[in-house]
Image (tube, rainbow, N blue to C red):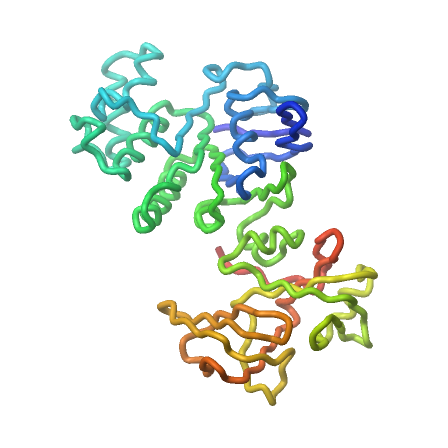
Length: 372
């Protein structure tokens, strides 16, 4: 196992800055997911850690040792790729054996490690098979087995299950988490799928336009996003974001005014008074945090139900609130049908306020952390 540390790392391709001043630590034995949209710099970061790309500036350290100029083969890293990278002319046994044979290990040791890994991954019966006779999920297990058998200090996984169909992808997430708990190897996992990251990671590092936006446990990113980008990227469906021209305190209440009706959030003045800024603001609230009530009751805003969808164990509403359309997720027994007038209540402890210019989150009230 190893501690991985990036200190003020930059990566430039000509005039393009792919990674900007990235400082990030992956702790010993940790499962760290690097996540962000296409072009955010996560793959460039992964390739620099693996030694496949030169670092333009900054330092990469493993267990305190500077690795910038250490070749890939000497970094004791095992990689798992999206495209399997298997040898089609070899059977499963020989594919898994390849990295051990290149290190000239004794045949008895090679056989012991292969059979131990095959048992862990439940692929013992596949060892004699040719690669072309395997399903996608089986091929991915072989690719993971070839990485595990090396017994490396660090795993790097580059979107290893993104191409699998939904049910198999969910099964592989479970298997990867189980493997990490059993092996305890430090893992850097790169993905664009935030659901995958939330399911797997001890911590998640969110990148956007080459810069690190926030790093923390899944519950922390969900409940206390550092900025509007993280708030919108983490969570499915994403957080509702409402624009307002002005935000000010009226007693202990927050009053937000825009093109549509004003919104009042009670009893948050003490938290906001030190940080509230002038100018435009955005209010954020997650679909699962909005309560639907009769419009004549105590509500934050009123609207009209445009659509109600049954999604198994919960329902999803699309509600028109004058200039905004909000998504709300509720238990299936909540009243409301398409065309109904309805009230929406925003619990003060679940509301987020963002600066309009910077997107920075202002502390409204420390959110209640959800269990992961």
